[in-house]
Length: 74
View 1 (cartoon, rainbow, N blue to C red):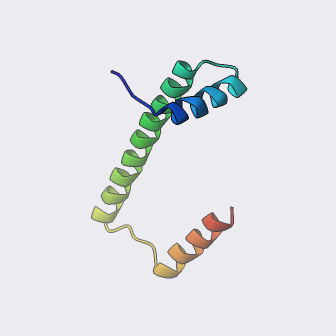
View 2 (cartoon, helix red, strand yellow):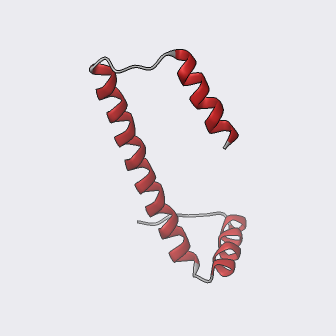
View 3 (cartoon, rainbow, N blue to C red):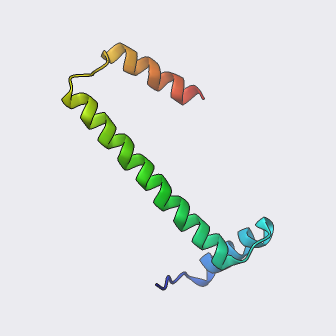
């Protein structure tokens, strides 16, 4: 697989890689692998939520609002 970046993007990636003590290829590969892992985690959480909803497990709107407020404060 090949990925193409603009010269400006390549310069930014090289700068980040240098600061991180790695090379650009490793930096981009690690970022892509983290994206895949996060996507899998998100999809699993969505599936779990759908399964809970299918079983009738819901929370009240006020509780959801409180949870969102807490998340935004963190």
